[in-house]
Length: 182
Image 1 (tube, one colour):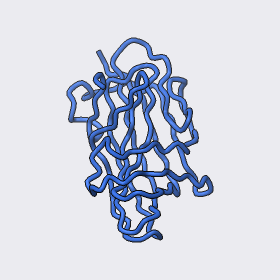
Image 2 (cartoon, helix red, strand yellow):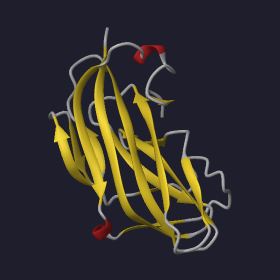
Image 3 (cartoon, one colour):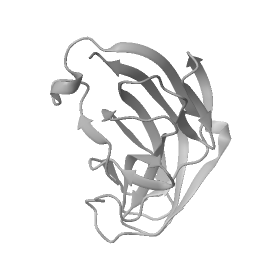
Image 4 (cartoon, one colour):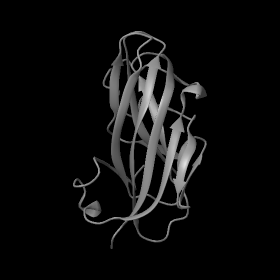
C-alpha cells in the first residue's frame, strides 16, 4: 500500500510534522488483566520479527477514554472518522504486557494500518525475549503514522519466532490525531 508513512519517534524525523500541530482528538485503547486476550501466532522462525510476516491482530482492545469525535474504537481498532481537508497524522504510544505458550520465544509488536481493505504494518517493531512460559514481557514504544485518511483503522499486531499463543495480560495504547499546519 502507498499513501501513508511511519516516522519513528514523535517529531523531527519528517519536515511535514515539525512545528506546531493542531490537536483534534484522542482515544485510549485498553486490555485489562481480566480480559484474557489471546492471539494464535504462526512462528516466523526469525527472532528479528520483520513485518509483515507472522503478525496477527490483537482484537481484544476496548475504548477507555475519548476526546473529540474524529477517533473511535471498533473491533479493537482505532478508526478514523470523516476528516476535514488537510494533512493528518496520528501519534501513538503505549505498552503491551505479553507472555507466550512456548519457552524461549521472541514476541514482537507493530502497528497495523488498514485502508481500503489492505493492511500494512509499520516497518519498525518492538520485541523481546520470553525465556519461559511464566515470563511476561513489557513491550512499549511510540511513533507517528503520517498521511492519515478518513476511514483508516490503526491496530496493534503481534508476532513470534515460535508458533503458539501469545497472551495479552494488559495494555494501554493512546492515539492522538493532529492536523499538519498548511
